[in-house]
Length: 92
Image (cartoon, one colour):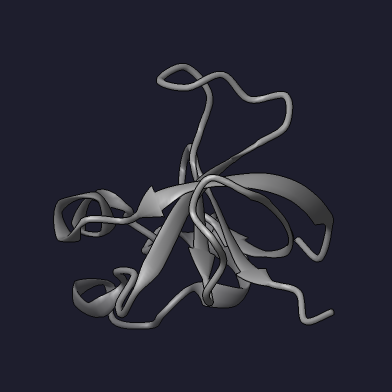
């Protein structure tokens, strides 16, 4: 949490992907919600991966904010799911 990463923005997250991103368990830190029925990512997110992450093998990074698809951008990690990270775009 709080770490800055350089990530490749791959595209817009689909509603199906966001629905699978369960953030209700106790270890999910800053984005945990008290009511597990509402503990889902809501709104518009991009999907990306870190420089060293392999597609379809390593976890994804759900990114809040706007960035060009197909380009690298700096993000700050603000939370996680069991396998994926949740980040926000850093303002330059």
